[in-house]
Each structure stands twice: as C-alpha cells, then as structure tokens.
Length: 364
Image (cartoon, rainbow, N blue to C red; front, side):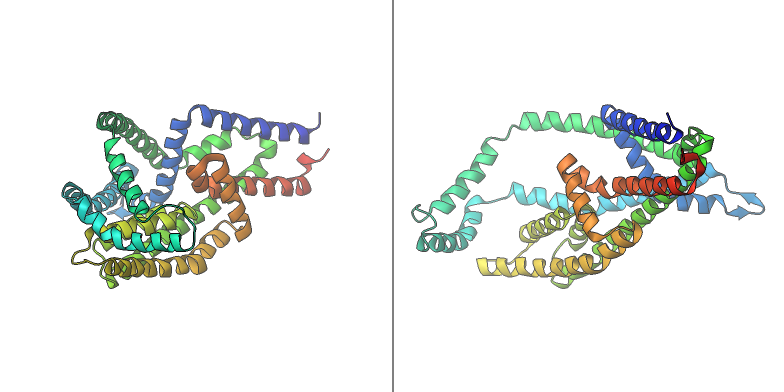
C-alpha cells in the first residue's frame, strides 16, 4: 500500500471517528463548539490584558481570563436588562387580554378577505367562516394547553441548561487559560511526514473561521444599530429589544430575517397604544416592514457579501447551496453550522490537493 493511500485512509478514518463521536456525545460536542466560539471571541481581550505590564510586573493570565469572563457576564446582563421589562409588560398584556375586543379589531379585515374569496369563488363557505375559524383556533389553543406538562418541561430544561452553562464555562476557562491547548493537542497526533501540510491547513482554517466569526459579530452589531434607529424613528416601543432579537436571530440564514420581522410586528402591535381602527394597525405594520426592509437591503447588498464572500473566500452560490444542504441534514442548527463546517472541509481539500502536487511524501 502506498504512502499516499495510507495517508488518505488515515484522514478518512479520523473524519469518520470524529463524526461518530460527535453524534454519540452530541451534548458534550455542542458544549465544546460553544466554548470554542466563546474562547475565540474572548481570546483577543484576554491576550491584550495578559500582555500589559504594571511596574515591570506582567498581569497574570488567570486575572486576564477573569476580566474577560466579567465582560461576558456584563454583556449577558445587559441583554437580560433589555428583555426583562418587555417580558414583564407582555405578561401584563396577556393577563388582561380581552378576546372580544381582539376579535372586534380583526373582524373588519377578515370580512373584507372573506368577501374577496367568496366573490372570486375561491371558497364555498358562507360569510363569517373566517372569523369563526380564527375564534375556534385561538380558544382551542388555550383549551388544549397542558400546564402541568409545561411546568415539568420547564423544570427539566432549567436543570439541563444549568449543567450546560457550567460545562461551557469550565471548558471555555481552560481554553483561554491554556492558550492554544486544542491546537497543541491536534499537532501532537500529526505524523512528522505530514506536519507541514497539516499545519498549513489548520492555520488557514483557523484564520478563515476567525474572520467569519468577526464578520458575524460585525453583522449583528450593524443590524442592531440599523434596526434600533429605524424602529425608533417610526416610534416603535421597545426598539432596542426588537433590534437585539433581530440581530441575534439573523444568524439563521434566510429564516432569521423573517422571524425578526414577525417578532417586531408582534411586539409593535401588542405594545402600541391609541390604535383603534384596523387601518391604524395596518399603517403600523407597514412602518415596521419598511424599517426592516431597509435593514434587509443593507444586509443583502453590503454585509453578507462582505462577510461570506470575503471572510470565507467562497462564491455566493456556494454559500446558498451549502446552507440548504445543512438545512436538509440538520435543520436550523445545520444552517447555522453549514458555513464553518464547509470552510474546514474546503480548506482541507485545497491543502491536500496542494500537498499532492508539491510534496514528495504524497508521491508514489
């Protein structure tokens, strides 16, 4: 068996083992991935603080890691601070919700839609069927809710979430404290004869993934800023909360912006005051849609080409195909992970191809 074939079998076996391990220990693998992302974000700040000297005394790395975690905790607290007032108001709104008043507001646009459907013979139902269906559906939702099951699931989720947070904090701490720990572990298992091409691929993949992550943070910041000022300009309450949700949910390709608009319309309608007619509600929905339309335009024309095409050096058509491939394989998580996974595979393939052409170790 040639050395080239042995090397390819070695790589193939390693990939299969990694996939099987990730599938079997999916929770641990998810914790590691989240920790890698957090450590990548916090590493520049940690390294900067660690390299500061005070009276010829270098700041300990442990202190630098603690400061980085403090900044992360502050960011999480700010996110909570933005969402808590909104959640409190929504609870009050739902506790005082008057379904009869809600149905009265919906009656006019529903009647117009019914008349349109009946006039064009798109339905054989009689006048009033649409509102009857809406009322039955809404009452049916609350009637079939199993609150005991919800409480049990919430308790179970709280326990699992707490364990997950502790695991992520623990892994992230050691990735930051032992700088380059994962990279050194990978380097140790690389045979000497394949060291150069493997290190080259590892370095390029790490650089592209870092660029992608930085670009993603820049995209989220830009979307938050544009959405916040746009919604504030049209007078929408909780503009910061809506903008933050839209920025975070936008990491889901294609579906994220739609979910952001739906959330914005829901918040806008539920918190608006002084609206009486259906026309005023439609004007409010139009304002929100226009604000998000501008954000989407900037994202499509400026942010996404800058992030995806430049950072991961892939054609937009490639990005489109791999995102939908990821959605087919693993749904929404697959869409989010599609670009990083594709970047690793793509860089590995390029480096292997270059190795076959340039290095004698690959030649028979």
